[in-house]
Image (cartoon, rainbow, N blue to C red; front, side):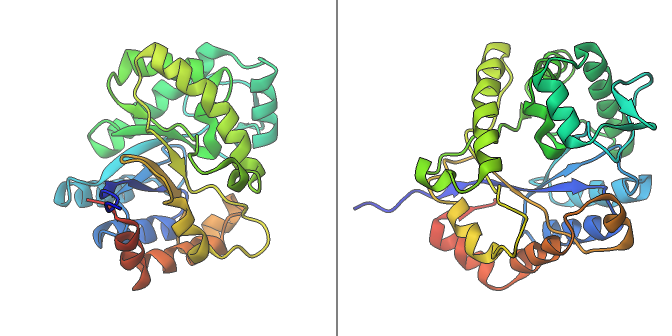
Length: 280
């Protein structure tokens, strides 16, 4: 039986900018070739000019690194555009309310488009270049209504830039244990159809979703993410160092350090080799 061909994947650390500890961990993994992409949150407090400059310098030294826009529409973050709605006390709504509003068609497409344009402008001002791709914090890019506004802006502003879709290729029996992943699969099916009609490229497959509750063994989960992935697929991850800034903004804390330790550890390169996966 012939050996499986070597596949290049995009191993993307989400949430650059959410805290200095997360930023430092992501830059360390990028500098050592343990990941090859990160998505930046322009509305997050720790995406300062100096933090952006550090990442931009790293990308200049290692051009294979991809830096994308992590489009954000959920609390506790604040809109970048004027008059964005719905909002509460100056911040976006929380995830359940944002998703519910999208499903019930209560969002305003033009306000979403204006917010995306503002975050794209902020990205260019911080980094001095346009994003290599666009994805979404808490997967907002594939939500109903949001996806249509986003695809319109992509055609207008970032033609040819790809957008993350979150559909998996793992067997159905393996998917059902991850309820969040099932929801992402369903929404991604509609997103892919709309992206194709709009001429906006997307990644062929996605992995990295898992239940953050309990005590998940990330080192055991990660090799399963690679099963059956075609080349150029995206594997999402969330490495980071926990600091007070992160604790104030996000419930995902200690698992970030567990992910960082896995990617920085000696076993990770061998897992990639065994799966015939490369990051370069």
